[in-house]
Image (cartoon, rainbow, N blue to C red):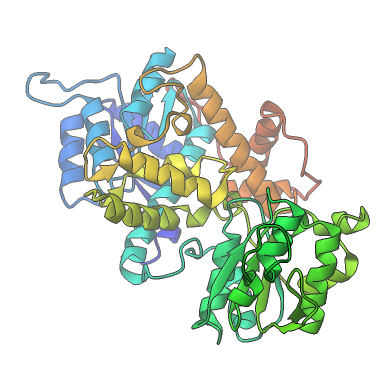
Length: 484
């Protein structure tokens, strides 16, 4: 029995009546794959519904059931696989070169689609990517049982970037030093601040969040430091500011780079002297509060440009925590999606309990410019507008995540454009992880160095590459239906 599936042969079910093609494909794919062939979709469905262990399915769409009135056609297998929990992904192929065939196959739940003759290297790449999705879904099944969903939302995930974030949070929570949280919009900077507060000795005291964006300077000063009665027209009574409201606890100042220079000077004084003065008063009020700041801007550059005081920058950045964008922690997408699904299903009274492999695959192929916040919105929108099934499938996703412009229309070339963009992101991500080393990137992608060079040319990728030592190439096969 193979315990670690990452090191096992990938078990492929080939649904194709051409036995000669199956023999050739088995030789071409090599020892990393274990191929079992059946001649009809009906037999394939029976195996998938039974106890047979299958990781991936290769499906020939050109051969319907020999008994059309009694047996299902290949698209039925696609639909069944897309609707089942943890069903193996299906890679479909056909000799029909029409774009409508590709769109129809993807719409019915295919993980990928090829036209014959098959390109061995591209097929292996698709099989490897599909297998990785299988492993992610299986890990997700274990996470459902092992991860307590009482974690602070947004900090779920076992990726290495999030492990580093959690490690720093645990270390800094027990002290009262200032913390600067950096990262793109939507990555969860406030979530980090709340996590630090909850793990600290100040957890029983208030957590107060404030963002100066879109507020006038005079209003920001009043919000932060408060005012005395009569300090300005309309000040009928004294008012405490956010710092006093957070006394004994934590104040979170979002987008700290938006503070005007005069307010930066007053904030620096509060941090240094641990006192503040309300508007209209010269009496120092003691402040016992932990300060956490956040920004999505380059504060070091703003210091050089004179937009941020250098002494304030040093004061607020004693400890820095960088929240990685979601595209750099793609392994966490299934866990986050599952968490948001449970959260919104409960909030909206929906009886949806899981996500199909096709749905997760579409999420993994998206670049997520809006980061975790965008993922959260996608899951809620998909759930609210779902068709009532107990699973969210690829048909429940917003059109832009399915490569569609409307629910029922595929734009000219959209499938090939989406596939090209997905390949480009895969290659770029591998090159980034290996500092531009093309041999190591090719090894991670399970493709030859020659094929990687071909992809770099085809996809116009020139940045982030560097010279490297000699690499290995994958064996190539040649026959009427499979080409290298």
